[in-house]
Length: 291
Image (cartoon, rainbow, N blue to C red; front, side, top):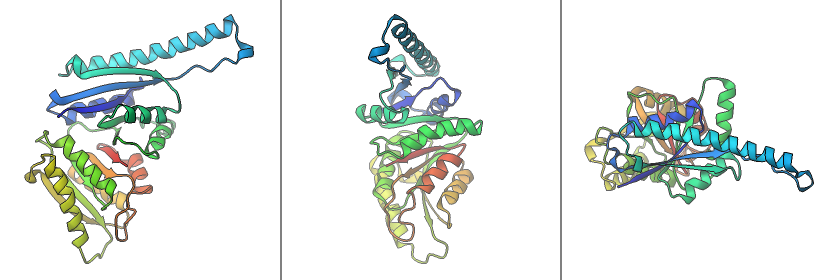
């Protein structure tokens, strides 16, 4: 079944992280379809009383410059993809001038295009660069979106498998369905179900029910039972437990639902701080988030 991914391109090196992750993660690429997306900066509007030959000419010059920059970034990304076992028919390119914030334009395209995931590259070389990237990623994380988002921050090539974090919320089960769809044909990846509970918790009945429902979703998507593993960690700080498990298992992706409404003491496990902390701190693995 075709997997259609929206891959954001910016011309910055960090934008290539998403492309590198896709090429490393997927071995069966014949069903992959990528749309490279560039949101160009729209030149400032010229007020009616300011319109003259010079101002209109400057506006056109700025628009042409922004468009040229975007088309160059798209072409470089497309050339790179097509040189690595992807056919030209599998890679589309789309450039548009911003109608809103960059984040909202990405979300709008993701919803209107009915993509299976939105892929965001993130840089992290300096505090200033992180702040710029966070302003986009954080805004996207904070909005409701139909498509899951993949946030790629220094993905490491040698990593494999998916760590699926569960809290009993509808969002986490939707993510289980997404993970199953993405890895069903990727036989080299297994999926580990992770549940974080409060230290000293006696009953694991709820955890068993959560694991059972998530596993059922994976099986329905075609993931063999032999590729499904389960782990429970006791920790007061969920996101740290997830980081530890991700590093111990050297996972390629960490997947979770963004808005949690599960039961028990951690009924809001993935609301707010867990997702944000993982977005800021997770390196090596790619963060998959679904509302």
